[in-house]
Image (cartoon, rainbow, N blue to C red; front, side, top):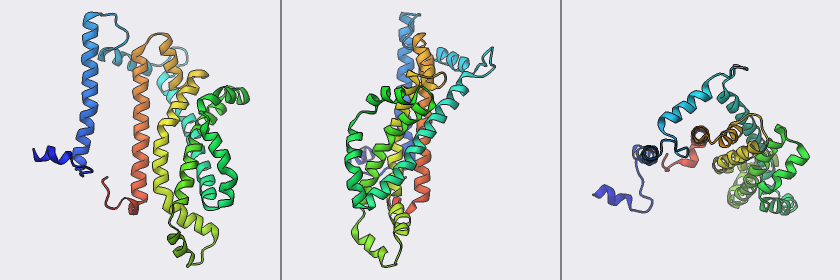
Length: 277
């Protein structure tokens, strides 16, 4: 009883093992509920297509891993390579670009005054509304899809980084100035180091956004990729195939999120002292 009461306390710390168990419990409840619902629906209507059973999901996985009879290439790995290439190019370009612009604009008020109106106006435009223009100007090749991911993640990352740089206490900057660093040393050694943990957390938050716009771009124009395969499966009412690919996307996003978090905690241990892992 005391354990349950302790969970109701605001910000009550919990053990890592308890955190993992609660997370697995939440996922397990959803999975069990889905398969129970699927079996119940198929008991009433064996031809139900909206809730594939476990057997149908296994068949969908098998089909994705079966080599094509003409190209002898497995569709799943072809789609995975295509999507990861676009995703990595778009997100990495956004990270590099936001680091350069965010650090410089946050450090130099004159540059921030020059860029802030442009960044604000651009960030107010929904990236989805720009997709037709992007395809018109860049065509339907990979360049357009990479740019869609880039623009959707670059703007929020840049604006967030500018705010983080501007929030650095003046006292910290003045204390570092006593050592006589150059502007470049101040930027790279102090400012980058201070904002790096929070910036990596911002990157984690943009992983989902990058996947959303990748799938949207592949749904519109693509010959391979996870979004392309979902589009093909939807035309054939193959819900099992759609669920398999959605599970793959969720798994990839989770792995990316955890990898960045572990890297952040390893590289910036000072920032996480006294916090739960």
